[in-house]
Amino acid sequence: MSRFLMLAIVLVGWAGLSLSAYALEAQDVRVVGLFKGAAVLNVAGKQRLLKVGETSPEGVKLRSADAVGAMVVIDGEQYQLSLTRAHSGGYQERKTVSKQIDINQYGQYLTPGSINGRSVIFLVDTGATSVALNSEMARALGIDFAAGQEGRTATASGVVRSFHLTLDSVKVGEIEVRNVRASVIEGVYPTKVLLGMTYLSQVEMKENAGLLTLIKKY
Image (cartoon, rainbow, N blue to C red; front, top):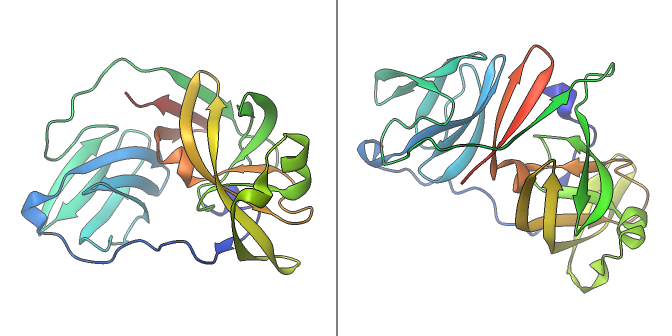
């Protein structure tokens, strides 16, 4: 998944993912993103990005993944799951709205979109905890980031101030997500607006042969 990574972001002060175990028989496991050799799973309501061979904190192991589906091991039993289909629970597949993004020559998925109705170019980054942009971009978009929660963020140029806030709207194609947590990082990094997991966890993703499809959840 390294081709999605443009900037290593460590957000200080944000709550980490809970590592507490769940009863396996009560889990609801859903495949919401598929990549070659990796998958994004929704496990008991938590978003987990797993590579083949990795096991989530809840004990779900990813055995294999491709454009068709993912094979997982749950409590010693194997299950073949397709995109958006659940191992348990009452999930029902509905009509979807999707957006397709072609990979560029640098192995990146860039796409036009908008923040609070203002046009931007996003870099899809599954390694970014949240939607992230630099302070110059935020000023140009009219975002009052100084009113957000101040923290510190480690970037390639060192540890700098950052501000954590909620964006009214993040939209790619016809897929709009409201009230999206974001980070504004003081300075000029990242040089692209990172479309991180606070948006991506609200959509379904499928990658196949250099084409990434985002699918709206209902």
